[in-house]
Image (cartoon, rainbow, N blue to C red; front, top):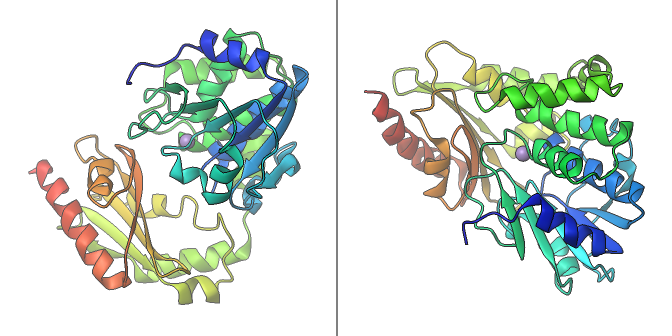
Length: 328
Ligand SMILES: [Mn+2]
């Protein structure tokens, strides 16, 4: 079960397919959207009919991506697809309920991901935890198997590669990551223009959220853990939109002496969403999130907990403190 299918095996299935569906995880980020749209654009260039699904709306901050308008919100209907490809999605459930209904009768599910907790839920699976973004795996698949690339493919994949590595800062970033960027620049990719779109455009409401974070963040475990309880009321006051909290957690992680940062967020359904980041390989936040049914990467992971928010915060921070005790 833990053996990966090769790109050659996956490409053979894609070449035989006429109608391909592709989707990513709920509450998509730039790696999720960049991966599915980049992949879909290449399949279209290869002559396939492609449907691109997302359970949730495409967040504002990635609407600049070429062909992001081709993403349709999952409708739960059968689209007579030959192959369905899940990208950047750690569990089948995280595709979302409507997306699962859409792929129910599809005879071939391909699961391509970089989350270590992925249980390999596809008929074909390629899970590479050494890859710092799903977009990087998609690039390797497309290029090694001679699928066509154009500028729209490259822009989408670059956006995923850039954001999931924290602008190539995180420890998962490899020499190969930089070589792929160089290859794409040789092919004409304007990385500076994409970075301007990604990082020099933010709505004022995001700054309102950041102001709340700076006012309300708390430090525990002798300053080694920074956390923020983000309430529905704060989200409502800021008129927050999906994607607005993206990367705000990095502000807390950047503080001297902090090893792990957590956002504990109230959701409209009463559940509590945990987002956690580590800054030291000895502190494995994925392990802590797994205690609560979540998962992700050792240095970036999430979970869903039951409320109320104060209880969830106490339980999660207690478990996280057990983990930071490894630091001595
Ligand atoms: Mn990813």
